[in-house]
Image: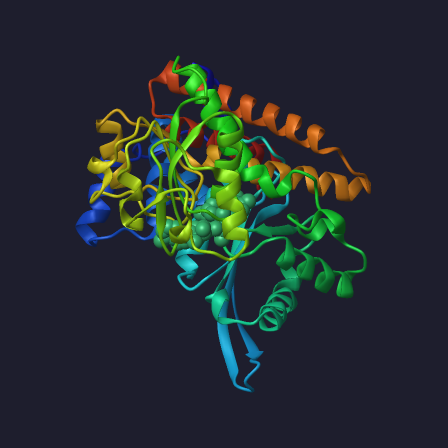
Amino acid sequence: MKQMASAGIAQQLLPAAGALLPGLGAVASQLQARRTKMSHSEATNTFILEALEHLEYPKRLRKLLLTPEREVAVELALLRDNGEVATFNAYRVQHDNSRGPYKGGLRFHPQVDIDDVRSLASLMTWKTAVMDIPFGGAKGGVTVDPNELSERELEILTRKLVQALRPILGTYEDIPAPDMNTGAREMAWIFDEYTKFAGFSPGIVTGKPVWLHGSLGREAATGRGTVFAIRELLAAQGLGEIKNKSFVIQGFGNVGSWAAQILYEMGGRVVAVSDAFGAVANEHGLQIPELRAHIADRHSLASFAGGVVIPKESVLTVPCDVLIPAAIGGVIDEDNARDLQCKIVAEAANGPTTPEGDAILRERGITVLPDIFTNGGGVTVSFFEWVQNLQNFKWSEDEVNAKLDRVMREAFEAIWELHTEDKIPLRTAAFVKALQRVTRARVHRGFD
Ligand code: NAD
């Protein structure tokens, strides 16, 4: 078996010792016994432990691979427009840089905490590895509701974040990117602030505006990659094409709305979408370009005339071929996994399925395209942006999209092969492939 051959490299260098790790069910139930809900990082680690067990890696590798290399917590003070001083907690977790500089997004969200960021940083390590992009994994976030700040306040907060994290960032050290509630605007501020200290540094951050050293195709990349991932799975399962298949999308921000647009262009029927405020459905398929224009005009989903309003909580259970969670983590769990009415869950969001929810989906024969592969298009085109910045060169959008297509196809082939040969779920296969690549890099770099 292919992955065993690679696992053998690590085992030759680090001979096996200790008992094998417990399986997904055992780990999940141990954690469940301790508390009712797993934290985000416990949930992520549950999946990693299952893959480690499959690889039969020695137990001592577990700590090495699961523990973040650096965690930084800072407090940002902001003079608000009303003259009050407000403070915000912010974090950057650098999980692993065995394969290249730390890479990962910055999230602005009221629910950001260190555990959340730790879990997302770990996912980035496995994501860059499964996509075979020469980066490590990191993540950052500020505990803030950006809707409560003016644009001026947001800009100052973003600049303060760069000032606080500057010692650990760098074009070859740690490169942030957009995530929830951050986009090209914030990335431009980060580029500008860092450049004040270090001189012209376009490669310090990705996801910048196209007119300010950003890459063509980056904004749509995560949604586009998600669609490529679904296309590959449908073909591999003999289920045909995207055309005429039905899709439901939770989250209509960068990732969700671009996935919807590209599915629409390919003849897919997007029958329901939701965001943090509401949901809209149309069994014949929503007119996505009109819906995107409606949202861009600052109207709500619920006020869109081309569909019927449904409760946003019910979007996950709308019947469809493919359900795409593209919002927040932990939304598919033991309480609702039995109610899903889809054949495939394509995880565009990070960590949308809990281990308990995942176990139910497996039992029900619903295929899950795992986040570390499905939403890997974003970091892939971030890598392309970084390369263009280092070269002071610009690729065409067609070139970017074609390269993204190739990376998504190759990553899919690698995990599909493991999935079929070893009869393991696609999620386990993705983690196995990623663990092999990270371990191999770590071992071959040595430990002195
Ligand atoms: P975004 O801020 O642009 O959009 C998030 C969307 O989710 C918004 O429409 C928001 O209203 C909606 N939302 C928030 N809470 C919700 C809830 N409880 N129910 C339904 N909808 C809700 O963020 P994004 O960049 O599109 O990121 C979405 C997800 O994709 C996140 O999990 C992020 O980590 C992941 N992701 C993003 C990228 C990227 O390139 N932007 C890359 C990889 C992964």
